Length: 133
Image 1: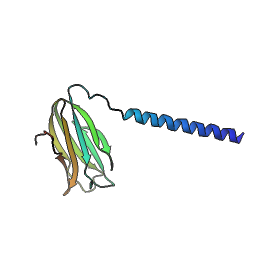
Image 2 (image 1 turned 90 degrees about the vertical axis):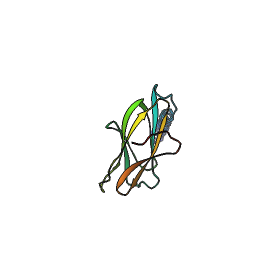
Image 3 (image 1 turned 135 degrees about the vertical axis):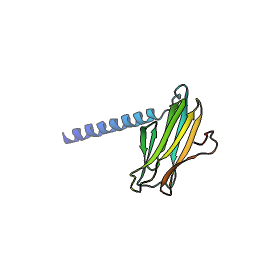
Image 4 (image 1 turned 180 degrees about the vertical axis):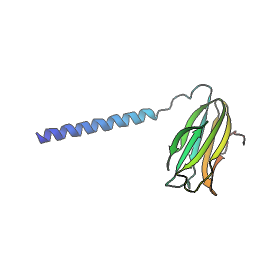
């Protein structure tokens, strides 16, 4: 009887793992961008810090908190948006970085979040057509 229960538990665990793998694969699929939108990419600098999270906000709404090895990628509707990047926990009182973007449909806006000199900075990645504030 114990062997039967053990086999059932093992099969149940295997099925749960397969479902989890299937769901994560589905969420990683590429879908078409929303109409009339531009893409925003924000990467963490390699030396950002291992015990710090990058918090990205757009128009005052937090889009997520990104730890080491994670980056933000999302689509914004065309128009003007304020992008904010801050560090969490902010024990050193680092100032947040703010960029005003005039998003155009089909454009990609790519930045690297850098924590330097007590302040957060969003550095435009090469090859982008983003105008400074």
